[in-house]
Length: 319
Image (cartoon, rainbow, N blue to C red; front, side, top):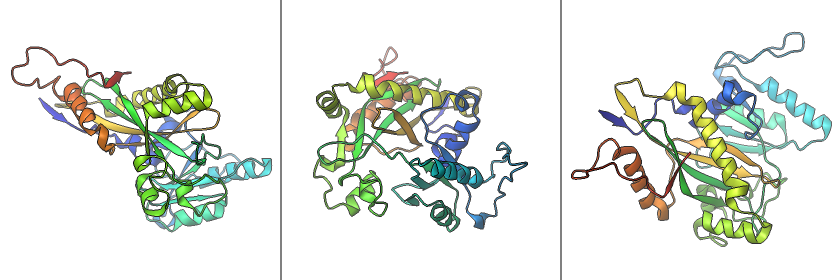
């Protein structure tokens, strides 16, 4: 028996453009997905990608994996502009990380020009203009949850999670200040003069976050946020199971994923992206790794001298 710590085809979830296509085309998600921001896949013009033409004023459904969606984006952008809706968008490189290849703007031409001068496919996504903010400081945050999928495609959520917090007050119209918009550590540590002012390493863990929600909003983390997170995780992973399962192959797989979420001011949870090789907060590293070994490895390769299957670690919840 061979066991590999990666699921083939996991990039269907872990590349931003592929995730957008999955949400739009998967029968399990296309009709019921209300937790993913409006998004469009845009190829730089220097890649000479075909743009889907309109026929009798109606755009055809997306068929080619290389079809550019800029016309769909522009139609939505113009509708929002006419209706006076919030019209801030974020352009993100499909394979980008650490805050690279990102532009936030309310100008469609600026967003498309930015992408057309890049070297790879991007996603333009409706920006969450009214996020839930942390006080003191009026600051943005996102949530990282770690998810383990074992060789039988059982899904486990690590009980602990972390908020990655901004150091500067959030201002929706200040597109130049990355530190009030982007919460990843690289941006905050390099550019914010207040890095670490509110939380050590700009990290808040679930226990502290639950106390904050209880005292500030009179709600609990489990009832207000985690129930939504669990539903989103399971929906995503079940939708790709037929494409990535290794049950009928000569080897088996497991993989740790990092699911990143945001919460808006109405307490609605939104999936932002999925990471196939997620970093882990240092204080959680030992427990998380031990849980992976116990669930994903020791169940197939029991340690010498063990007479029974190892118990499921309390650190993980089976979804």
